[in-house]
Length: 59
Length: 439
Picture 1 (cartoon, rainbow over the protein chains, first blue to last red):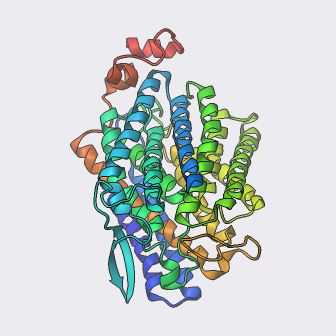
Picture 2 (picture 1 turned 60 degrees about the vertical axis):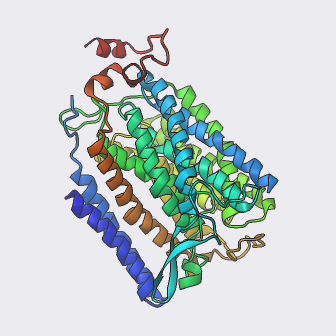
Picture 3 (picture 1 turned 90 degrees about the horizontal axis):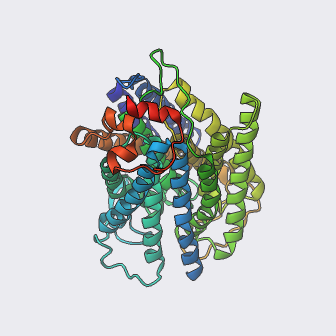
């Protein structure tokens, strides 16, 4: 799960970069960049949930 | 350039402020350890930055390694010699940038100490700092300040003036804040922070006076940092330092007030430590666009930062079980990301120049010219590149050299366990500490 989350973070970054490099100026470029950021947010949620709450440090 | 030098010499006040805030928000039995760690990580950061950091960061216009992507050059890392060789240390802009970088990377290295307080080993924090000062920080700083591909987004792809962060909301604060998040994830929460059913227990900071004095000390440091960064990296006229300092102070003030009002509304009275976190969040958010917004906009940026920090502290502690005693993740990562975004929403950046900046703050914000998209790409880079990189490197370090102190060390306190003496040897400040040391 943790690895998947980090892969989503990198994938979101790649989507945002690809939008800037491949698409012409205009609305689609912005939309794709925002979509890339949304993928990153999903990745962040997955990474966060993959870190168990206490990992043996509880009292 | 003398004026710029004076601004740079104020930056250590920001470091002193952060060190006091981290120490005050930690336990008394780890106070000496935290201050010693602060001194050590600043030292390690300076040495590693001297060895290879500045070589990889570089300065705008200096040699760099580039990739060609669809006919456009993407400068991705500096190609300066190590050990500051071939750098004329004569008061030139490049030499001042090296000095500012050396102090800034120390500031960034202090940030994770807040999230790792009371359980992060001294040796591990130094090793982690070496990784940051030798890789994460210089690479991202090159992209933003060294003429790298983020700064070139304007000239290459017509995105406003390219990614703009004059004072370091991203390159210093967000990089440090995301490293703090990685450290908190890797070393886990403090013993006793969460009950068996996952409910967090309050572990209040041991000295609120240190925390609040640290906030006051940080203000002139941040003014110097923002002013020097704006002059060196975005080429603003030194006469604009007054505006930058006003914006910095207003942003911090608005953030502190927003935090005080919010905590008063939510908890019935203002919370001192959260007000301090809010204040720092305002300082952090002010950095990116301090030279390109009017004071009223700085108030808005600071107010939003203060509110975001309060909600973020709750989110991390209550919902995500991330134990961050110093509030570093909320203040620096969240505040920094908001500061980056705020440039796209509010800033007016007429042109990117390396010489004197003659822009006007009149007229519409530059969000309609693609500036917001450049800022968005910068934000995506922080989350999609910097966070995985810093997490991966610290995870590897943890496999080789465990970063968390042994359970006995946490029970004794980091002062006694790692340094052999406490910060307050003649005072017994909390009875629970006595009880825990004896068990």
